[in-house]
Image (cartoon, rainbow, N blue to C red):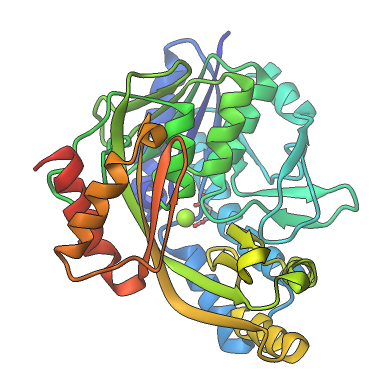
Length: 391
Ligand code: ASP
Ligand code: MG
């Protein structure tokens, strides 16, 4: 029987009623003659709540212990969904990431999957069971429990789809696929019927939360087609190979950035080491030593002890690294953007209309990135979406 991997996001399993509804969807898909492996996220805002709980204990939690804590969120939903399926008369069993054979690096809070050995999943599918897998987690070679970075349940699903040779990888959430901007910020945003891996990965890296960037990267390498859609129904978006024609596919933003200016670029590698040891890796980096400039952008998405990291930077580099907090970035993403200066010029003019000059700008083949104060990001996303995609 063909194997289908499905993943349900936190909002789709937010309460008991929703979990029962997901169980029914899974049962129906199985009744069509498929083997089902179902990856779940933590219920609703559980991950944020657990992070809040940790921060109420200390602002410098050990990353190992945070992973022990955060992985509990997905364990709750996996067990409840398995119970719901069994209650419908569908045999099911739940597994943690470790039991599913998801082997990762030991970078707590932001681990990468190294390999997947789904031995127990195969055994249970052979016994006719639906297998429920806790997303967002794995185990390192030294047997430590790890998490895959925020939104990492998508990565679990894609990695399992690849390892199991699945016929499909379906990612369910509360939005019907990928839009040209976050529809909560830009109501005129359009659903994209199809998007290339490259564009999707760039959108995800630039802050679009609909799919996880590492998951898309995995899908691209393993040539797994992703179908992102709403749990409630709808046609969704297919993420597939093959380049589309030149176009702007979306505008997205993020407001969780820190800009580090390194005034002595010769110390850059020491700064990187200091960050690395604390699990804070650069999201973007620019260095022109001749001009005496090195700039690093950090995303706080998977850094849960920023105050401690900042204090350490101040101690070690004493005035040679300066931290500008509350930064954000807006990205215009699409094919052929880097071909000429048009997109950059239009963006600068649009921002000037808002009385804004970006703190930084970077043009690549698929993305124009503009660095802005965090509190202007949403408005800039709306204006740039209007400029490039109408509405
Ligand atoms: N529960 C985790 C998060 O909120 C992982 C996920 O949802 O994919 O980031
Ligand atoms: Mg979540």
